Length: 110
Image (cartoon, rainbow, N blue to C red):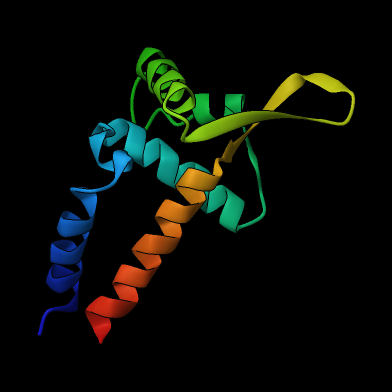
């Protein structure tokens, strides 16, 4: 049995019901980078996201970041009194999305 292909089938069925499925490829890659940074307890700033030029151009990164924000997938948070640096965090909806993907991964291995 190919666990990865089984996982892809499960994700495909799950994606039909989830609003994250409508995200374009670049937006999903950006969201994954933000999720990884949170997982590693190294929150990203907007500047950090804008430096992800291996994903897309600066203009595209800016547009996709706006799409993620307007879609309720991420939020900007200021720390302490520093109002110049915006940190990018997953919303509870996106955190739930990654937990569901993890659950599907476990299911694919079963």
